[in-house]
Length: 126
Image (cartoon, rainbow, N blue to C red; front, side, top):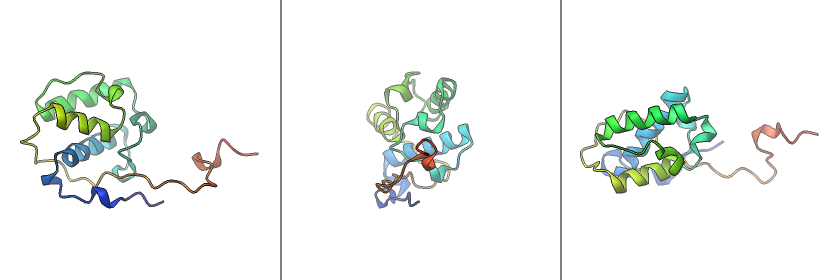
């Protein structure tokens, strides 16, 4: 399945939203033992298994990274990486962020074919 999207082929150091998205992708992947390349920035974080304990832990790490106080409900109020990053760029001073860990570009998922049953057809078997 092709997940890469040209929209996110931007220089990480020149796009604040991209910097924050990359950090969030890396942190989510680390927190939940996922491959960062499989994370879609438009999917709800709960799709990847993020629970309340993981969310609060990530918010704490994000507070340290941004040196800012954030709402503990951040990922419930802004349930995708895309929405969370947009909120952070609009509401936090992230002008000094340029030292993100190396990360693959956040991805947008290509729509599944019309005949796809999702979850590999697991729940639609007859």
